[in-house]
Image (cartoon, rainbow, N blue to C red; front, side, top):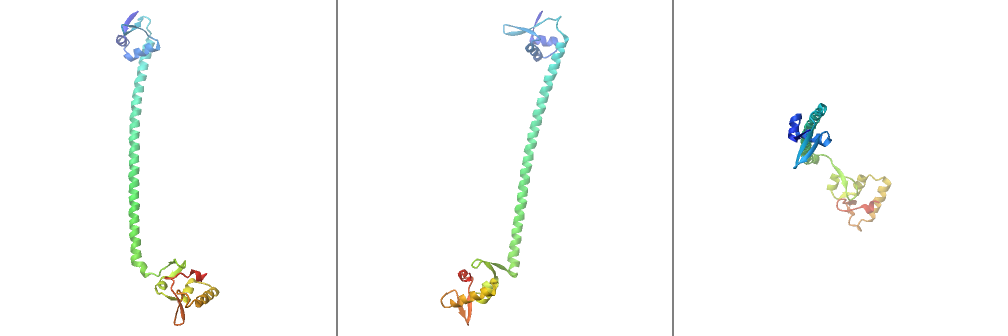
Length: 200
């Protein structure tokens, strides 16, 4: 029975030291420790060739595993880099889209301002009078005061209701500052006064 160091055993069997250590762990090789040094006990005549082939096979598998692990790590790094690039691209695209919408909003504001300032003053306008909550002719509001008859016509009341309101206004001539009489006609000022209490 020969007694060899791990390095000598590796040289003898043409394998790595790690392969010798693996065989020791598996129990296919006996070993003794003398003065802190591990020695391999080898029966040269009984050493099967199959065990050496197994060592080479295990060494090959270990090398392949190591190589695959390195490739996996490399692929993970590439994948992470691609993911970061994709996120950056998405952020950049979002900024571009936001900028486009911002520019379009500015253009729309300018267009609306141009239309409002140049064209709308020449177009007949109507808006909601906050005091009576109805649509009132712009020209009528600026020609204050206005005749009660015209005011009621703009309100589109039925004739019965319109006559009832006229009588109510007539009774208030001289008693209510909101109701004016000029040249025998009754006038109102819907911009200045609130007539909701008389229109119900």
